[in-house]
Image 1 (tube, rainbow, N blue to C red):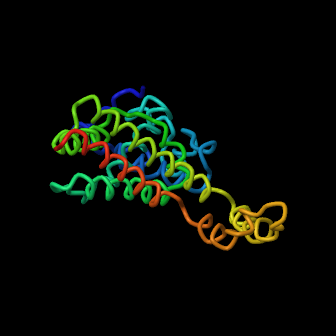
Image 2: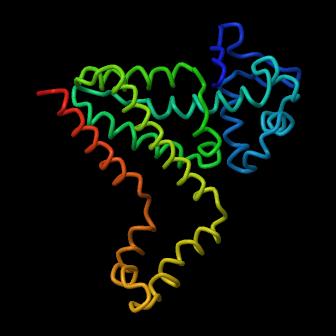
Image 3: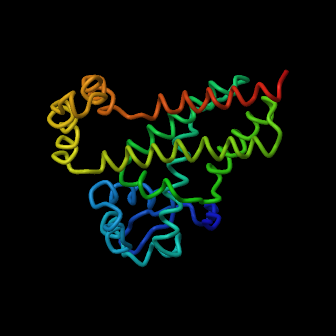
Length: 235
């Protein structure tokens, strides 16, 4: 369980370093996202963050206790971007579908950060907002509390799982992604029907499907299952 992030107080919002750089928690998080984009998780260090900010690395400790807290702040920042502009109405299914696709899109847009953040729990304000809103949708739809929690758990883990899977693929070097994609055509489409009848019969469809994320169809299958379960509670 991650520690609760400290929110910025007015005195911590922006502070000038000895090098004349104005720092804040948000400025540091944005720099950390850039470092992750170019250097990956292994490259996210206090020293490299200092270089990216044009500040002495020790200045970061005025805002975060270390890289672990920076990672939690990055996670909550991704969730801020997920929730930004999301205004769920009365239709629980439509709202959760939109949220799920937003999670996937934001994490894949920042693949290095998405892989790093998908398994983290921050206790931060935007994570809290997402959990509170989804549980409210499910409880208002008619789920008892225990089932609302179970459904939320299945929903968010599936979406973060797909987000991490697809973000990890996007984080691969281009030549590796191309080589993996080509396997569906160069290997699977060539398997003979006498030894692999099912793959041979569906190889064209397999090639088309496996080059795309399975996130959206899996989300619809999950929502179908949630809706079917809800019918047992709402008559």
